Length: 411
Image (cartoon, rainbow, N blue to C red; front, top):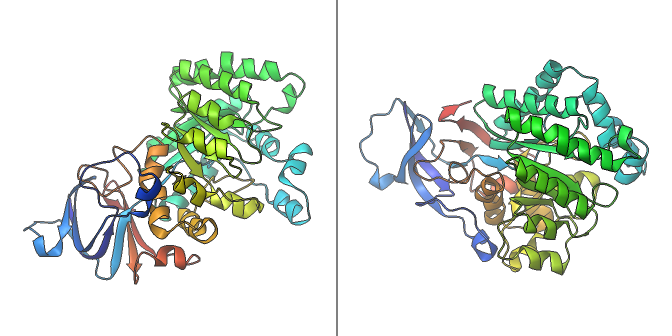
């Protein structure tokens, strides 16, 4: 099927040749075409250009995009979409003055979600999770990474990863799966941390590798959770089972997790609300993508990733939602882009680059997603009629999306 979009006010993130990521000052450059056309052949971008150069095309579907913007779908490289129930009670606890750490110490937080997940049947978890997945698709996300980490038992972690696999099989959105058994220590192993690490390495990882249930291995490297040494041991075990590391670091403290991630060639280090000069220096010239989660900072009222300082140092930066029941119950990448502009002082160009091309890098899909490039996936956002793409973060509370294309089809 051939689809032709005509009279596009502005076509964003146009890259003649595919690039992996943008860094530093390059992040402020968002290549666009004004008064453009775009051609989709089935699920692939086949051609684009200025309207004045439009060739004769026999299209099966023609869409007049006068006054509208077209851009690649968002690439959300950090989510926990698969979970059971919610944690709205803890939301009220925080309003009443309890901190995230205090709630966790009372048996809330991740352990609360783990209890609910282990009490819920796999089919019910799938039914709850697919509602959230469908929501983010309609909000413009075309590729998403989903983590386990609310099982914290062999059965619970495998159950989550099988749900993620089923979602990937049943929906047109691209899904990458991450094993995050090292999200917290379960109550059963509260006084036997070595025993839980052994369980992950000797029981969970072999079965995950056997069933091909994950692409990545993740660890919550943070004071009160997993130490740097434990994080390294789990990363190495994951690598030995064919999983690439992506790790949670520097949410509340800088303890050396970034350096450990770089040492083991982690694809991304995520959160980064607390960054030292040494952390920034370590990331320079590395393979590892820093990922900021601004809606988590918004929801928890904690510091935002210091984007301006990091970009000034020449680093790349990606944006993701952290969609989860405890600290970010939203998968709205439009809000993430807006919040990055409003609270982190990123320009719209930087934020869009961070949520598309750099987000694609942070989940290993740069070759197929993240830009308007011939041969890439026909995953697109068509906005409503707007004055410019600046309106996307400016009108932060409005849904400015008219249509989302996944695999070349309007969903």
